[in-house]
Each structure stands twice: as C-alpha cells, then as structure tokens.
Image (cartoon, rainbow, N blue to C red; front, side, top):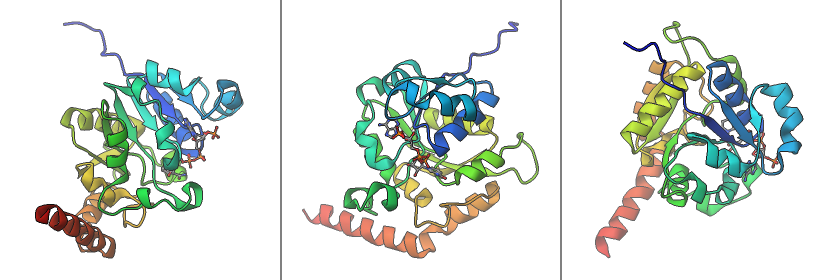
Length: 239
Ligand SMILES: NC(=O)c1ccc[n+]([C@@H]2O[C@H](COP(=O)([O-])OP(=O)(O)OC[C@H]3O[C@@H](n4cnc5c(N)ncnc54)[C@H](OP(=O)(O)O)[C@@H]3O)[C@@H](O)[C@H]2O)c1
C-alpha cells in the first residue's frame, strides 16, 4: 500500500472581493493551492490578498482559468460574459454568483424565473461542468461558520448541478471548506438557491437546508417559478 496522498486540485477564484477572499482563506486552510484574480492586473489586488488571503497567488483571470483544476466564479453576475470561456473548457466551474440588481443594474435576462442564472452561465461555458455552490450564504457567515465534519449543528451549503462527478467534487470542496454539502437538485433547480428564495441568505445546518428545499415549491417564489415554467412548457408544446 502506498503512503502517497492524492493531490488536492488547484482552485482558482475569479473575483477578489468579499466572497472571493473568504473562499480563498477557507480553501488555503484546507490545504488547497489557490490562485485568485480580480478584473485587472495582479498588482491591483496584491495587497488585499496579502492581508486577507495570505498564501493565495494573485494573478490574472486568464492564468486562473488556465492553471486551475476547479474555478470558482465570485464576480458580479452581470459580468459573466467577461469570463475567459475558452480557457475554462473541460474544467469544473463553481458558480457562487447571484443576480443583485443594485450591483448588476436591472437586467431582465438575469431575472427570468423560467431559467436559473447558473443555466445561463452553463450556456456561456458549454465546455465546462458548472455546479452552483457557495452563493446563498452571506460572506460573514461563510467566514465565521466553518467547522470540522461531524460537528453538531455544522452549517450547510446547498449545491446543484447536472453532472454527478462534478457534484461529488464540489461536495468534497464544500466539506473541506468547513460546511456540509446538501444536494438541492439540477442546475434548473438551483433557482431555489437564488435571491427571492427562503434559502438565500440562509445560514442553517443540513436539515434546515433540506427542509427549505422541500418547502420551496409551496412558497410564493416557488409558485411563481412553477407558473412561469409551465407557461413556457405550454408554449413549446403548442408550437
Ligand atoms: N457578498 C456576499 O455576501 C455574497 C455571498 C455569496 C455570493 N455572493 C456573490 O459573489 C459575487 C461576488 O460578490 P462580492 O460581494 O464578493 O463582490 P465584490 O466584493 O464587489 O467583489 C467582486 C470582485 O469581482 C471582481 N471582478 C469583476 N469582474 C471580474 C472579471 N471579469 N474577472 C475576475 N474578477 C472580476 C472585482 O474586481 P475589480 O474590483 O477589479 O472590479 C472584485 O474583485 C456576486 O455575484 C455575489 O452575488 C456574494
């Protein structure tokens, strides 16, 4: 039997703001190599990274995309079309983004209940496997919440995606970050993790996240989403 431990994937983070730096810190603490970029040159974020996520390598978005095995999207959703899609071909991409109108402006394309925003991201990154995760918990709670696996009341992060192996990899990442992963469903279902849902902003243990997922279809938002999706299905069947 070999004593060699499997090598942890290199994690890249696009976005060196509130969430990006917290996730960098959590993943560094778990032993991952972390690359991180903002929208501009590495020099622009070097000081922030030195202070908030020492040990992470500040670089360009292109190098993050090229050199990482897993890339976390922690930039404003309104800018998703600036992500280097070509360089992310074949990679696992974790979408931690939300449509936030105060930051992104009023964007009907990002606020259509018939599709989740992660489906839009997946459509923009056809060569990548996209999983939604780390989006519903506020950055303070992410920062203060991690505990070792098995801790009573450990906080949980909902994850959603269409690819089983990608979901398994992201579950491991969430667990290593200090949270229990809870499967919410497909990328289509990830709308239950978005703003307007009960889970958005939630800082709950796994049972609480599971209960909120089960309740979603009966909530005001869940009913609105179902009605919009049925209408679309009806239009497709008729055409
Ligand atoms: N704040 C929260 O509690 C929270 C929790 C969960 C998820 N989220 C989501 O996470 C995302 C980031 O939120 P935040 O609060 O961390 O925002 P933030 O503090 O404003 O940070 C955004 C970061 O994204 C960078 N960025 C912009 N365009 C980029 C690009 N094309 N490539 C690489 N980086 C780029 C910005 O760089 P520049 O400064 O150079 O523009 C900045 O470093 C949002 O989608 C948000 O909805 C937020």
